[in-house]
Each structure stands twice: as C-alpha cells, then as structure tokens.
Length: 365
Ligand SMILES: *[C@@H]1O[C@H](CO)[C@@H](O)[C@H](O)[C@H]1NC(C)=O
Ligand SMILES: *[C@@H]1O[C@H](CO)[C@@H](O)[C@H](O)[C@H]1NC(C)=O
Ligand SMILES: *[C@@H]1O[C@H](CO)[C@@H](O)[C@H](O)[C@H]1NC(C)=O
Ligand SMILES: *[C@@H]1O[C@H](CO)[C@@H](O)[C@H](O)[C@H]1NC(C)=O
Image 1 (cartoon, helix red, strand yellow):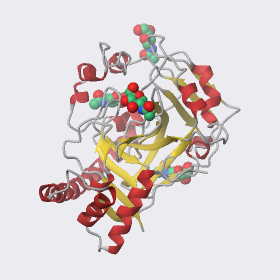
Image 2 (cartoon, helix red, strand yellow):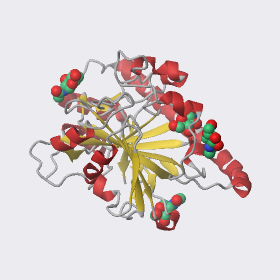
Image 3 (spheres, helix red, strand yellow):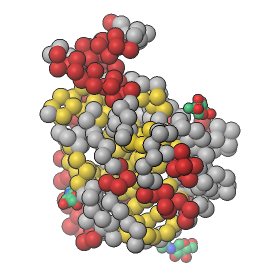
Image 4 (cartoon, helix red, strand yellow):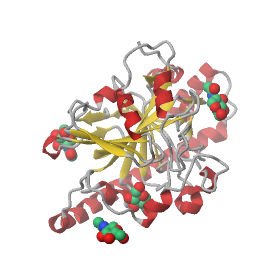
C-alpha cells in the first residue's frame, strides 16, 4: 500500500485550515507554519508580497485568455492551408538547435554542465526557469478548481516508441485512429495533448527535479503536453503558452514488493544513447505507469523546460501524491548511457530561482 507522505499531510492541513477559516491565504500559511514550527520567512512583508503576486497572477490569466483567443483565430486560418499531422515515427534531420542540445550534461564540471547551459541557449539563464523548490506553506490556493483529467488514460496504444535520447528514457505512444491522450482541468483552459513521457532520477534515492517542502523525491515522471489549439508539438513549442508538463513524483519505498513498473522491461533495449525501438506487442495504457495517482492539491506555476533550450513556455503542474518506485527500478534507469558512453547516474537539473513567481494549489469542488 502507498504510504501517506509528509507533503500530503502538510497540504491537507493547509486545505483544512481554509475550510475552517473562511478561505484566506494567510490562514493557510500560518496554520501550516504553526504545524511545522516556526518559519523564518513568515512575517508581515512576506504576507504583503504574497498578496501582490497573487493579484499579478490574476492579471496574467486575463492576458492568457486574450492571447488564447487571438491564437485560436490565427490558428484556424492556418489550419485551412497547412495541416501537417505530426508523425512520431518520421526520421528527419536534426536542426542546429537540436544538435547543440546534444552536448549538455548534468555534471557541474563538464564543459556544458548545468552552470553553462546558458551558453548553449541564453534562455537557460532566464528568470522563469525550472525546476524550483516549493514550500506548500506559501502557495496561493485556487478554490473550486476543475479536476485534472487525463483523457484516454486507459487507451491501449497500437505501438510505443522507446528512446534513450542521451539524457533520459523517453516513451511516445501511437493510438488507433490517430487518437491522442489529452489532459484538461486544473489550471488548463483547454485540452493539452500528450507528446511524450520521460524520467528524471538520481544517484541515490533523491533524484526528482522539483523539491517540495525540502524533500527531493526519488524520481520524477514528466508528461509533456502541448496546447491543442496547435496542430503539432513543434508549433506549440514556439509559442509562449504552448506547453504544459505534468510532473509526478516517485517515492522510494524499500518495503514495497509489488510488480515492476512496466517501463522496466524496455530499458535494456535502449542502453546506448540515441537508440530507439518500436514496441507493438507489449504495449500498455498510461494508467499502468501512473497507477492510482490523484491530482487533488495539484501545484502549478509558470516555468521552463528543464533541459536546453530551457524554453520558458511551460505551465507546470505537479502532483503532491507520490507513487512508488523500487530500488531495482532506479538501478535499471542508471544503466542507460549518455553521448559520452557514460552511465546516466543522475539527470535532474539544479534548482532555479523562483524570482518571486507564484505557485498555486488547485483545490477541487
Ligand atoms: C538530411 O541531410 C542529408 C545530408 O545533408 C540530405 O542529403 C538529406 O536530403 C536530408 N534529409 C532531409 C529529410 O532533409
Ligand atoms: C481528448 O482525448 C479523448 C480520448 O482520446 C478524445 O475523445 C478527445 O476528442 C480528445 N480531445 C482533444 C481536444 O483532443
Ligand atoms: C543523495 O546524493 C546527494 C548528492 O550526492 C546528497 O546531497 C543527498 O544527501 C543524498 N541523499 C540521500 C537520501 O542519500
Ligand atoms: C526549443 O526546443 C524545442 C524542441 O525541444 C523547439 O521546438 C522550440 O522551437 C525551441 N524553442 C526556441 C524558442 O528556440
């Protein structure tokens, strides 16, 4: 059985306090801080700052609506002439941008280690980068949010493309009749279509990219999606509102003796960097990967891709309910090799400055 994690409990306290105390953010924070003992950042200026940033967020959302409608109109015009359905199995030449991305690494001392990613693409030195550390005692709370839904979570794919891209294990799915998995609800104003899922892990049991309440989880699954107002992932990637990533945390549980995650079966087939293969027999629905994860208390903020080009057009959503990973599964992930032929021991990016960005928790009706 899944253990209740510390963050779940903390978060629940924050939510409960809102119900009791008429929904103010301050109450949530002070209750949660009280629960955790003193918090050095909790004083009047901090409160004020929080209100300020919350109102900024609302302004930003109005702007989003406006932009969304504009894009939709433009998009409709484009669609008529240049409909070009993306096929994940097409092998095309790499662009210059993609080529230079191959050089980055996760080792501080390498020529293109994390501190030097900004030399590959200046965006990596931007002010809205990911991942970040989140303190659930200091988040805005959105009441009466729509539940986050993954539409097609039980669809069995026709085939799956399994890839070692030199930095991670990446899976993409192809469904019958060109169906697509999409997610909606939570902070999303319209459906976002799944492009791929991939993983981040560490040399030990601390390998997630995002850190919540000072805890770095064992690993992190990223479901990369793009705004369905665009025809393709590539087109959405160019747009300031184009992408959303749903992050699911893995918690190491040494007592867990359940079945292996289904992706474990594939890893040995893509040990070498840039190896790919297509599985058509042993295919499974997304549900088999994300299990019974639920999205109550989803955290969301605006950030970036966590690998070069670090494009700052990602709406982040993080589940606060981790799912289980086992030691042997972490060991399997670390068997993958990078471009230099070395094992990918860890592939999480160092924490980035929030620069005052607001994180919002979405509470369902
Ligand atoms: C890829 O590059 C090669 C060599 O530069 C070229 O001959 C080929 O036409 C290119 N293919 C595509 C699909 O652009
Ligand atoms: C979302 O996915 C479901 C199930 O595959 C599908 O019925 C629906 O049309 C999709 N919506 C969009 C906008 O792609
Ligand atoms: C994992 O390794 C990192 C870096 O080497 C270290 O900072 C961290 O404390 C370790 N975590 C655990 C749980 O051993
Ligand atoms: C960033 O990279 C993605 C592919 O990973 C690409 O589609 C996008 O156009 C790039 N964005 C910018 C602003 O260069």
